[in-house]
Image 1 (tube, rainbow, N blue to C red):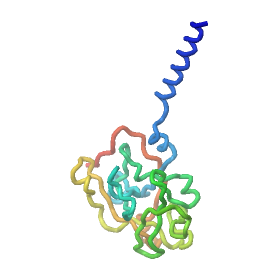
Image 2 (cartoon, rainbow, N blue to C red):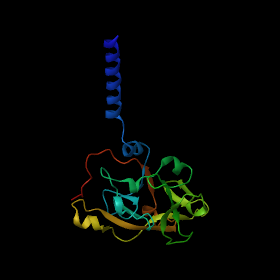
Image 3 (cartoon, one colour):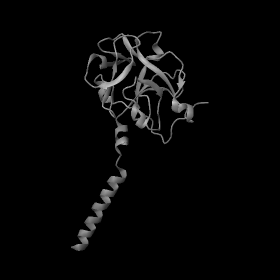
Image 4 (tube, rainbow, N blue to C red):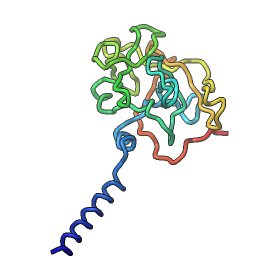
Length: 198
């Protein structure tokens, strides 16, 4: 009887150990169901730009205007992750912060920032033909700035040399097409960041 109990205890311990060893941590689990909002074209950054919050890790500034930044493949990237289920419902929600992308106004040059998700007209988006436009103002698209990409503060001091550009609302047009097309793409499963192209 004692031997049988010991055997059962050993089996239970082994099962618990294996469950813990192979369980995903919260960041990995979240990573299964998140996407980058990634520029369709590389423009002047061969590693591509993704919508991002300025800052990094504990220095992320969720109240700052959003930018596009070299996509953070293989490194900490919670500040660039979006919930694909929310995207399908017209919301660009960042699950790490439970905040949604909202335009400051429905006009050209309006900045984009994170706000409490409320479904208002300035945070209700339509993803159609690779463009992200306001549902209530379909002629206004999320647009990458026309200026050249610049090195970020971290990019100036780190070997990864990450780049960034401005992001704003703009009139959907053929002239701005390359800066207005997006794709929803899962972050790459890598063990290290993608280094600069030579």
